Image (cartoon, rainbow, N blue to C red; front, side, top):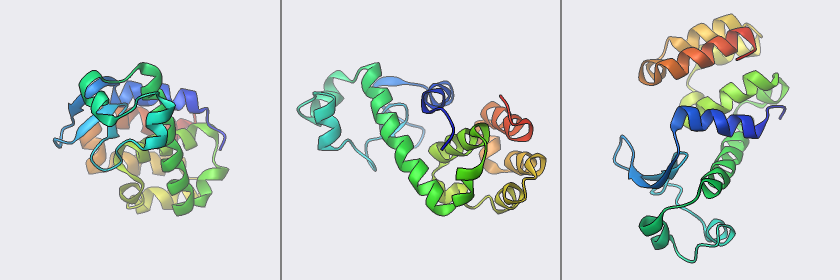
Length: 161
């Protein structure tokens, strides 16, 4: 992949926020860091060891550091990237801006939901990025995330942020 992962993490912080203590997201799910879902994904023992935290209960009590939040987000991005490339191998051939956009969208809504953007994917396969941008905005997702969708759609259309 061509996109800059640090740049993506910065954009995710801008879009998702970063909270260093456990909070409940809009669906009432325990979450920490840059959108890490503690119910579904949790935190692995390997991740706890890397962060030098002996038990997850300490995260609920004390929270995590910014470095820990970025580390967890890196792991989440890798999972999303792998899932997205399996579902749509064409992403690997896109320019770095459009790769970043699609990873951002997949991080936000999940790869299965992103895969339902059939008309957007058809346009991407045909390199009709203006149409892909229009399809991004013509979605329930765009109504939910508002300005984020506009920024990402503009970048999809123009190939630049």
